[in-house]
Amino acid sequence: MIIEPGAYTYETMPDYTDDVPGAAEVVCTRDEVGLVYTPNVVYASPDGHDLTLQLITPSIAAEPRRRFPAVAFVQGSAWGPQNIFRKVPYLGLLARRGYVCAIVEYRHSGIAHFPAQIVDAKNAVRYLRDHADEFNVDANRIAIMGDSSGGHVASIAGMTARSGELDDPASGASCDVGAIISLYGAVDPTLPYGFPTTLDHQLPTSPEGRLMGFDIRAEPERALPAVARTYAERDFAPMLLLHGTKDKTVFCQESVDLYQALKAAGKDAKLVLLRGAEHGDAAFWREDVIDRYDAFLTRCLR
Image 1 (cartoon, one colour):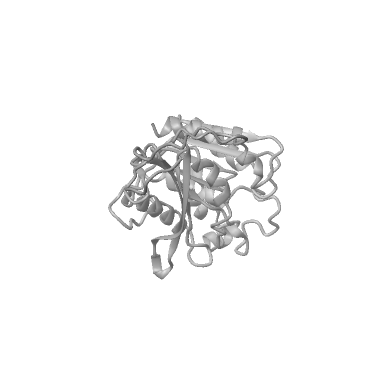
Image 2: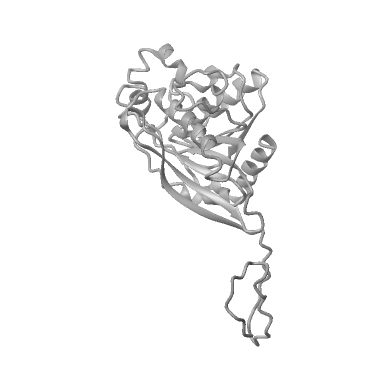
């Protein structure tokens, strides 16, 4: 087959139809989902500290102008410095389902105490709305999700998005979300023995103590603003909680207690216990578990 050079478009480019003995063929639909990774997008600079998003953006050749729902994913780190690249491969699996995934960096506990991390997560959501055109985001369909300490931050950020609590807006955009997902979230720093392998649990030297900046054992009431179930009566989006039953880092009782508080308050909430799963287990990214995220997000962000 011979063609002359020209200003071809996809529609005018001749399809190659010569018979090639021994060649295999796969028919493409143009509905395949492609992904673009954009690293280190600065979304805010509180107190001179640049905070970034790791963005994974889907695209479909047959629908180049399509907007996608977005998931702001708060990376866990025991509230310390985050490895914000750690979940890029896993979030790619979710992005393939048709979600713009943004991994959120927050000010860690060595820089700022609670509620700075909540403020940062809310401003990351605002950034996605403000830059929806740039990243093909449907600004009306944004969720927040996180794991471990990121699940704590995502939960409280989502639960207080409509009340205006724990906020310092970086723009006039809304920080509200249509869905909240917490994976093995450290949602109650006051729970006795809630962190089974943290020997200095709740002391100022512990991860949760560094987050709060004081001895939680001595002043548990002062730490209540950092407990997710404190906000169970607020108006907020549906919540999906997942936790492994063999989690020795964050005891699954934390998610159980939050779930029970949500149900008692009449909230739209679901809890999934992964039998035998540990903290950060790969089981949270099995296809059948991603199916649960996808179904929940589809229902909530429709």
